[in-house]
Image 1: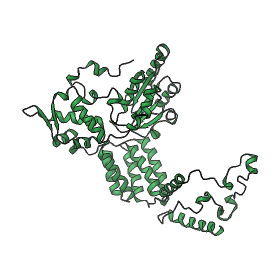
Image 2: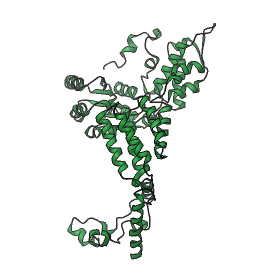
Image 3: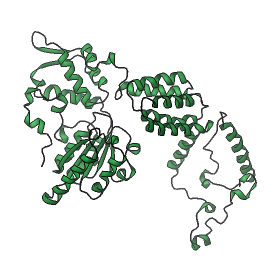
Image 4: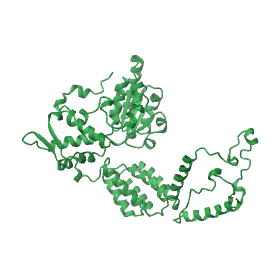
Length: 443
């Protein structure tokens, strides 16, 4: 089997030539912290390893949560050949080279191949298409890693051939374990007397990212002079210097990422275009993914503007497409236009509340029968049983409206969509009230 960790084997650990995060990369599941929903007893990845039944996977989650490590552990345990590509620096040529090697290994040595592609969301359609046949026929087992939603970034044919597993940011317990392992288990650090004055701050500034935690610890150590007795006390000030908190306008993977997008969305919802533009500027200046911003506005257009201004969803959809075509820096203008429109639009969350209420009923009363007059009748028997027999074709009636019942009997009096008085929704409300009154009068 190909050695998955050649660097560690060739370099003397005490030399410290490798970054701490690489020295501590787990070689077995017993050394892995976090993602218990995937690697715990009887969980999907552990079962794959124990049963040696690996399938193609996409890991979706924030940086530093174990995507690369899990890919290597899966390959190691399954005794597969392991190849790693980064979507930023690799293309169709490199993919085809790996596929060629995989075909030869399978034919000559009967050895399966795992291809790990980091940042697979950066592959375009043609590059992803190049993987399809080999994934489908089992020449390679694909493991992709992405920080972006695969539903948006991975083509449907490839997505349908993979299992998507979501990795969560690491919590305090996991980060404490990693920090303790670094201080007492690393061949370099365990020989030193190290005291972390504020481990909570160190963990907080890592943002649930193990790599960022270890890199921050390593940097803080370099910035700290040992005392006369050789003890290294990492102070709060050195931790802040290590993470350059005071010099960072925006952290795409940490606390500020979530705080600023929250402020942006709340400014849009609160009809404050000035606040929305400011928080958008913070994100753009910090290098945030423009499609992430556009996607959040797309959701807001339906959730918070809704039918008060139905054009909002169309504009937000056009924005999402346009920024993908144009890219930065011009995309900032399109994003700004859309943010100003959404901020200024009348607001309604009636559709959002309606579907939430309907879903709640569906879960409380599952599998209610469809009223007989609404059922489809493609066969003679179904017609004889009365399927669709009393259905009233709405266009045959005044106002193109019939008084028939559309909900199951148990819910026939329920109202899910309650329009507001805002914008276009006021007109919708008046029409629905008129039609609902006619239906009640008939009943």
